[in-house]
Length: 214
Image (cartoon, rainbow, N blue to C red; front, side, top):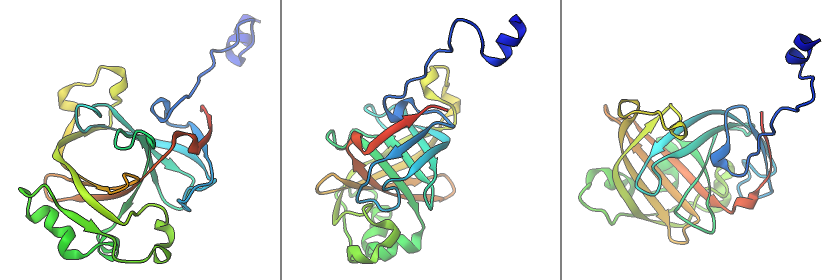
């Protein structure tokens, strides 16, 4: 009987409950339900953590947990941010160069890379909100350059305190923040020239309606 209980969860002591209180507590397999929002891609959707990445961006975000979510029409990167204290929930989607240049003027966007000594770049959206379709709610009107520095990412969990220096990969990090601090464009440039661009929306924490641990 003791073996049966140990295999199938019997016995007097129930297994400890796992409580998720914020995106920082998420692990692969966990799920959450989004409230309705301006971001049509994730509004009202149930999302599941498929994988996670970990970032050291600066002193305020030296263990940033980024959960890669499934359940929408494309991958969503969910995390928390210090950019807007009233909207600490960060939702990001990756975009290809042709999409970037559909939203922003080519010359203005490329200048961010071609003039690295200039840390006061600005970019503006050049198309209407109605033309954004799946990008609805992820693009602001006008952005300024808030950060440009070396940063690091890892596939090992920085929350367990055992991650070492060689587990981190360096990249050039640039962040363009909208004037109302509700949106951002994150740019990651890696050795060899690979460049990843993400459109970010900052939301209130209560836009996550419910969590379900795996």
